[in-house]
Length: 439
Image 1 (cartoon, rainbow, N blue to C red):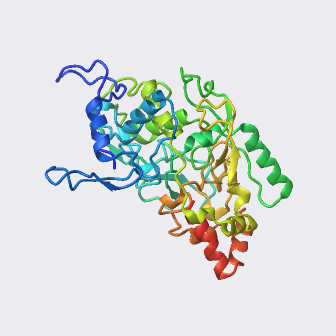
Image 2 (image 1 turned 135 degrees about the vertical axis):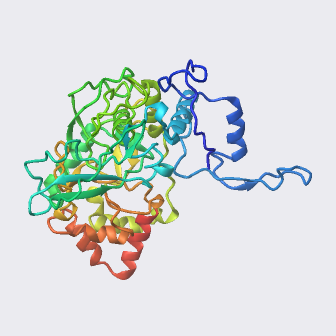
Image 3 (image 1 turned 180 degrees about the vertical axis):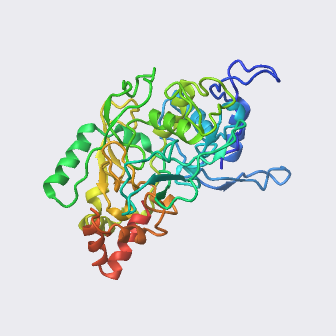
């Protein structure tokens, strides 16, 4: 467990009582290095301190590192520094005087991605629909401020964005936030690899995954180390439940803006809100270095260690024979020129094809995101699945077995795999579930 560093150090901080300034990069001091050592961060195991009987800390036990919050090994020192800065920003609860709101969903990244996994926060979406309950109506004007519910308020705001009362023509759905560990591997997968898998699926005809071609919707990042996209450029979407975002820095900028109301140089505009309120910090709330620290933190998170059962060849064989591996591709190859050497030119164990698939009307939310239609969702990576407690895009499945069975709904591309799973013997079903549960 990491110490709770719910504070920031701003470059050129004003004296007390001065007007609030823009959030600046987090600075670390040597005292916190001592604290991290004391708490056993990144120790990998719990062990006694070995202190003598006269030592006041003799009964202290060092706490294991969170298995889903470990950086890649053998990183250059500057990357370890970025990881620590980004980790702190990821857990930081923003406040009014740091630009929160004026309407928002959660106060920190960690609120939706605790331990870099899913939840506890979630996002609600709403759409005006036709009589069938899932087709969007032509007239969406009742939702003046968009399809996202942002009920919380800061900086003196007087009205949030919530579901309109008294309407029977609204479809309100929930989205569980995706996990963020090991997302550098997803960003590093070659474009050609994604296109190759889509073509293979089309040829085999079992499933028909498609690339979500998206538009880069942010200002250019001055740091061109990872990409050189500018607003309007076409790219392959990889992040978000419908793969609507192409890069991790834009993923961070989008989350800051849309979930917390925190503006950045990539996303400098405040979102419209019912009362026309502004937040307490004029202009941009976080600078690009801070934003890139958060993106770099996600880039260098390690793939969580798998349980021993995940190495069972019988479970792996069943995973492939039932067709689960058609969409949940065990490995995808990463770019040789990816800027993080530990990730570049690797067969990454990510268990996704990064493609969108039609899951049928049972999964429809009435929203289109670029090429992803109402019932189309990106194949979620199964890496680190054992750290999750709810499954599917909205958390409706409480067990992995339920999640597999729910793939078998009407018009779902997952029907064949769900039926193959159902046809297994009890012993083989148990073996497959143990394999998947250990990923």
